[in-house]
Image (cartoon, rainbow, N blue to C red; front, side):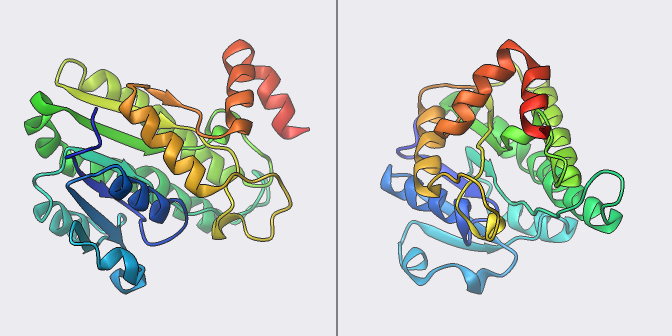
Length: 241
């Protein structure tokens, strides 16, 4: 679909990859960008000043907050589900409250926002509409140190596939983006190769514009994605070794 002239909603858009996605949408001439954040005051002033930006209070775990935000965004034809959290812990000893939190935001939050906004997306189907779920490479094979996070993203990956089948033929594209590690606050202090979030955002939106249903938005995920498509068990072994 075309980014130029679109009306987009980005969740978790106050920092990290979300903020870069907003900047890239504006650079590609989106008509309106709704910037969703739990704390609207945390959205950067330079973003707020753009006349195309509408800042929204949006907590994806709160049904009332989601309903209020969606009521204000009835013209959206591009939804980017980016809000997410990451809790550390392995599958046997990790804090279950963190696992539950990750599921509430990374899976149920994505599902809640998508369901609420679906009537608007359906209404926009004739002119092009899309749902982009920012997932992760490790939704396809887990890293043992963040098992709860991986499980929540795996659930969102499965939901993305189910949604794609459910709206087929309605003019709504359903897109999954599967980045590797990104150099944001979420992975601060973690020693690993990390992609530039601005580059990841640009690749995601290029994928949207070129009609890709599966986007590998950085070099590491593109390489690992080839492994996964050829031999899923090999990727699992790579990530857990």
